[in-house]
Image 1 (cartoon, rainbow, N blue to C red):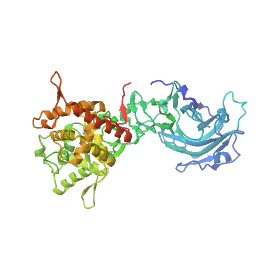
Image 2 (cartoon, one colour):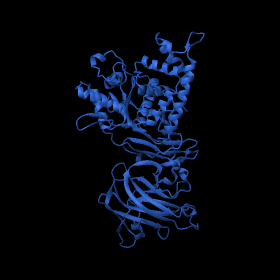
Image 3 (tube, rainbow, N blue to C red):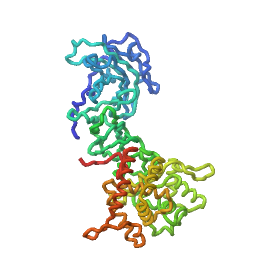
Length: 577
């Protein structure tokens, strides 16, 4: 998507004007503050006519408003001047014959002029002429004055039209951004936004280098009504909004060096005007901040962007009380979570703080999930027993306390707050990282959502008795504690959802029972196998039963959140064409 021609920017074309007389039609000696200017920091915007002070312009006579800033308005780097205005009458020939132009520092050489939109036809909203908030990048350190003018378009001088009226209702400095968004009270818009003529469902943001943000830029997409393809420079993301989330935020680390041109292409059922698409400053990330990121993007988040070499911590935007750790390797993950795994889930160890020496040589998990009450129980037990926790475990406690997953009572007691923690590791192969994140992600939702827990419990209780015996035996084989009904239902749900429905039959009809079959005393729980001519065993009855469960769970999570079996994210990085 390189090399978009700037002549397509239409109503947002930049005009570079020579110096001109600042005010040719002002009321002699008139100078009154304009009340619509705010956040001036002691600077006053004076209107040089009654109409200018009122912020109201009717197409008659000179058809312009002139202003001066006293003292000159200092513009910080990476800021824009946002003008809020309304127009009447609404559209039609009354406006089509005119251009609305905002000039900054009109009395100085090299003054800039920006043509403000009179409608939103360029975004597929030809009838929209309500309110606008237009933010132009201020190209100078100081603003001394402004001029707002109606100008007759070429060839429209003889048109018989009504007299359009402009109401100028706000003027302020805002952090620089580029894009568009149809919001509740106005269309927020900037220059350098256009729709591709050959593809009217694709909108582009592509400012020239001179006007771009000087620091890292983030990309935001809000209000999606169907699937969309997002392109930022050479990077592509497929976005499938769900009932619980119609927004996407991508930080600089996943956008590459330049997010331009930024392009959003709506799906067949989508409509671009119902969305908001922005490129904006990424801001400063403080050490204690968590990176809000969809799980699908976590998988491609570059490790060199981590703020801590051993791990990074993300916040799941759709479930902001769920934290997701990605660790550099299994060794780091074990120092954070291994003792927790034995305390919370491991058969014969649950509820006991296992000393380091005893943990040596024992396997924890390659991915983890813990709810707030189990985390609080673990750390409160360690406090009461004065147990020597590892440095990483104390770091984990600090993170949990800062984010309200656990809380410290005035007495010092560690109590449950709200939320959960998940973990995957960079050491896992890519296909397992994806599978683990899906499995752990659904555990996280299970912790947070009572209705989901109840649905899962009902599916388990109505499951075929033989299938339940097989699954319990499998959990015992994996060294879970099958005597814990909460854990059993939670794992049943997650194993049903960790792979696409199309793969459930192979997992439950081949992979899982073959592992159980390796234990001679467990074989009795399995139905008779079917043997292929090559000697491979399969259990088609189990495949049918669990595929049916996977279908039911997948339909449920899709209806609730837009997810599916084998997919816990709304974003797919670098989708295949």
